[in-house]
Figure 1 (cartoon, rainbow, N blue to C red):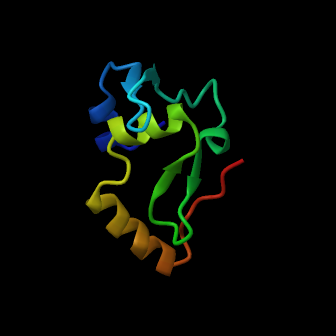
Figure 2: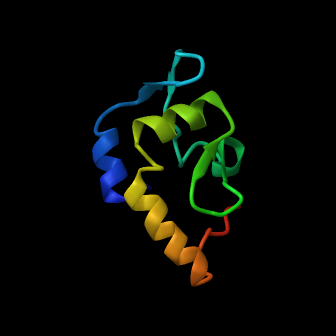
Length: 87
């Protein structure tokens, strides 16, 4: 449940390092965890912010806020296509 580019960064990894605590934690598992418990969108809708160690490590490992993604998200925001509604 990620874009192909993020999925390539993930590969077969199941853990990553939380950039704040430097602790190894599991990556977010979309079939077992709720997105909203681990992530929120930035106020402008262009970046994903980690709420937990799992969220922060996942964002870092999958490079979910790389410049190409934030640019396209900015365009989607202007078109009222973003951010997605997450339950």
